[in-house]
Image 1 (cartoon, rainbow, N blue to C red):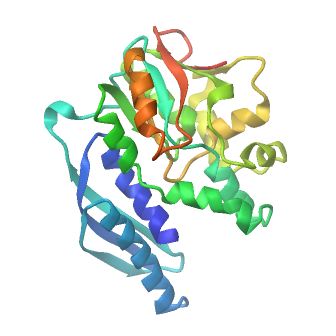
Image 2 (image 1 turned 60 degrees about the vertical axis):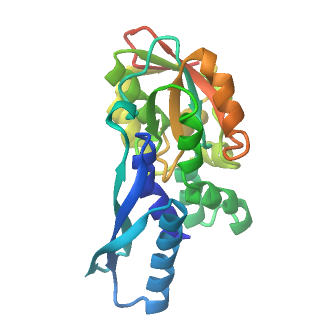
Length: 269
């Protein structure tokens, strides 16, 4: 599962630009205190996800390291006139998020034994899901901007899109899909340190309505591993895109809109 999630996360950057992954190189750090079988399972998980993406693993690099690390260097292709940028959202666009957020919180809880294996299953499945189907659904409409939600969290990546586009993004707090238990865990203070760093980085450029609880804000700052795509599309295309995402991305929802530039980069209401 570790190998699958790491590979899905690496492949996502190509999907977020509207491209197709083609070649991948394994990057592996591995300690000699773990078994060759564990090493093989990690690489097998990565291989399966690369195969699912329709790409090829063309070798890689490995070093001895006391802390296991695994990822991929991915090359993909897209027509230069059809590249999705994260800095070209248009005023009036609606924002569609294809995966629920909260994986950083649930992973932290798993490390602390604050969540059961059964409760953690959906988080693992969501992280291991490729953004391939979401990208293919987006090709049926005009995507004005796109980003994937990873380490900077929902607010950090939406903020990049807003700032790069010279706009303000308004997110609807009650519409953002959440992983089960993520909010309850945040209410208990089980939040990764990266959430605080994301909040500090955005600072006053993000503002919240009075009806957005502090714990929910933490979920929005939560750094994600292999999160979904955030697609900005014209209002006339949003319904069709949601329809195309319905089967492959059952959690996909309209979570916000693009507004003219205001003092705040991100506004959560």
